[in-house]
Length: 305
Ligand code: 3PG
Image (cartoon, rainbow, N blue to C red; front, side, top):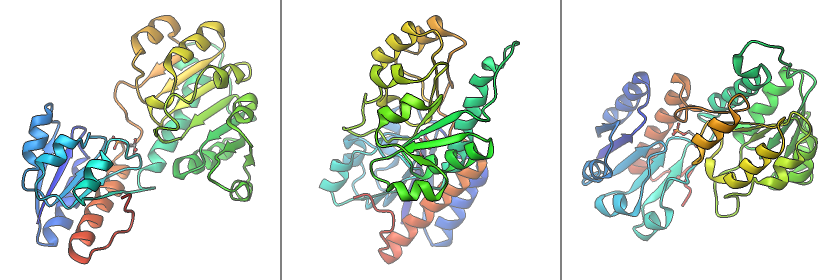
């Protein structure tokens, strides 16, 4: 049983040690491919793999074609837009994610980004507090719920919009349910994005929503760059000098945004939402357990397809 862990952005060493213990403890063999730069190296590494663990690494149809013995791929994390699911399905390869395992790390970063913007990007001068401000959660999943809970701890007035979550579930958490994204953006000073990147959501956050933000509005994106309509973001920031955008995923037009809107635009150099030792351990070990449980017992918990 050969399991490949292919991570262009490596897990913390403690997580790798734990993954190795689980795999070797079940009689398997671990092959580690870290910080690789060429897709060819990825294809080579999976040639005789039975199982594959990745983070945001792109599991393309080429990778799937090269992995002749592959039975399962687990995305150690939440978003699986990096997996070519039709290619997996065509070969009967099971695909899974590890929902919830890295959510707290992402939620803490989202709140940290709000503080950063509220305090003028940590530059001298008078900032503002999060307390008492309206926080909008766009998609009330694992991360959204945690951002809501932390926001409440800061004394924020929390609202949420998610067409797939009953409003009672939000209200039970003390969160005000909105009926539309327009309603959410129209009233919340801070909006935290937690929608996945799908055919329906790509470029769905554009001018209309951004322009609806109240004075001093700030959009926090720890989700995916693809959900933003970048040309419309640029237009909204150009038209309103009070708007702010902070992202954990550099947009394609990062250089332009940085040059034009420095101070009210910021992006991390490399996606770091789930970059904590805790999240690496939680997601990495869960992925290893899921692979072993599937290969040894046929357990399909958290199967996507
Ligand atoms: C996720 O979808 O789980 C997050 O975006 C984390 O991605 P990462 O594993 O590349 O840090």
